[in-house]
Image (tube, rainbow, N blue to C red; front, side, top):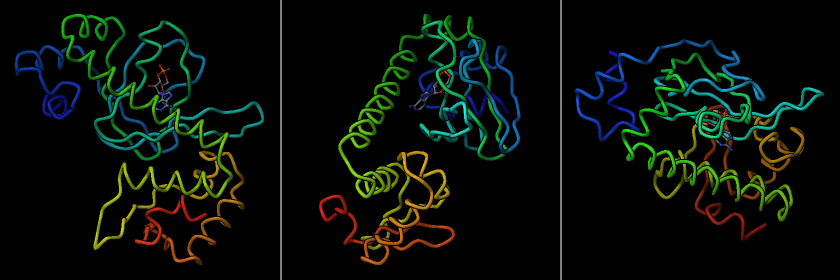
Length: 225
Ligand code: CMP
């Protein structure tokens, strides 16, 4: 039921049943297949999207078809808030990484909702601060670090965000291909493969088809390279 999904979103955690029922009446559910483009950079923004299931990537495409991966978002995350808040066109494109189910809220309803529930606005601001911090870290590492440092930083960020600690090692489910890592750190796919191979040969990590394991020796990888 849509209401149960809404209830599970941190954004709506403070709302009571009646308020959730009101929101249920004004949202739509939309399904997107893997690789389908959900919204395009530069288009006008008319809706907020919340992920009920699946994963998406936030990307910039260059004129010659190159892709820069800004972030990936999963269940309970939201996107599309920026153009609703500032009235500017979409800042990036968003593409489904897997078959995904999204809950869509129209601009006017979104603005009414945050006017009536300042705690939702606060949660959005908190998430925007988190994304800005992540962007700041990325800008810093793109300018200040070489490609080894950038890949190391990305692995440690992934470990912090979605890694599981098992016997002092950190296991990251490998959802990103080398190509995706390359577009996140601003390097070629070949360079990323070489860096990961070098990290593996130094004993910092083990990479298999499904996972990246950061060994104890790799948890302060940045200081060792
Ligand atoms: P909007 O600009 O409306 O459309 C694209 C959306 O992508 C944007 O709102 C944000 O929700 C999301 N987005 C843009 N940049 C980032 C980023 N650096 N990290 C995470 N999400 C982002």
